[in-house]
Length: 118
Image (cartoon, rainbow, N blue to C red; front, side, top):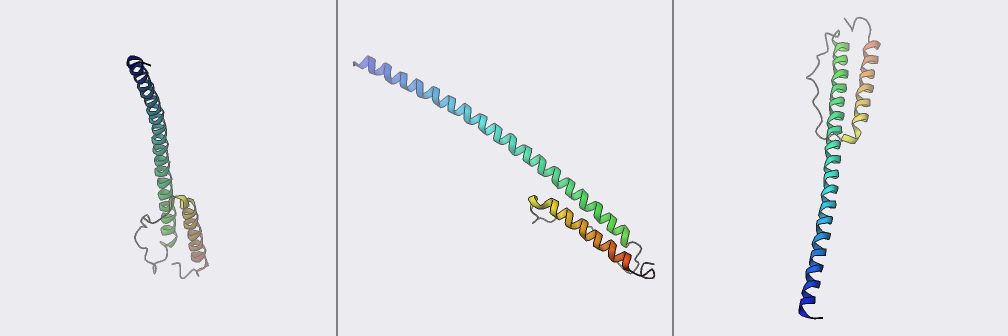
């Protein structure tokens, strides 16, 4: 093989390598675009779940305030704030616990004598 043929072979291999690299980069860009889209969708879903959870907790809190508003000897504290240490995967459980606590409050208020509720 002479020098001209070797040069052509090297140039051909370099061109092929460049094409393969561009194809890999396109595939990788598509993969990254898909990962970004999935992450954005997950963030949007998390925001929706957070909003629903906050609204649910506020709903139960307002109902609890209404239940104890007829108890003059009980002072209602400040509205609850979101817990920064809460786990997103447990939002449904937390909301269920709030509902259960509300039901316990209702039962406790109902069990009071009529004089205590005046």
